Image (cartoon, rainbow, N blue to C red; front, side):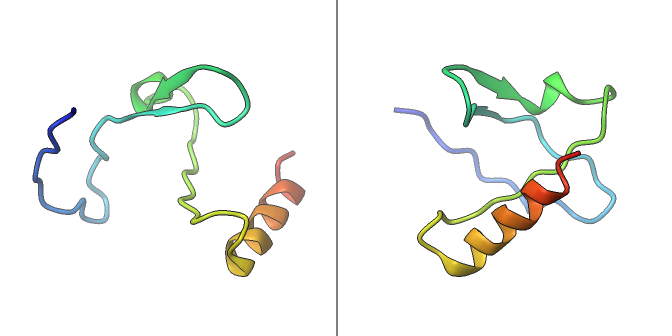
Length: 66
């Protein structure tokens, strides 16, 4: 079991703390540190495809992927 660390919310303009998550399209993990200083990163936190608002955002993000 991983113990969660209590920390204050990130404020605008402040760097995000590092985190690691599972990749959605392959059996792998990646962290924010993998992208820091290399390329812009857009992170969208969506509830799931059962949510009509999230589903709409996923479709719109797919159209802008290029």
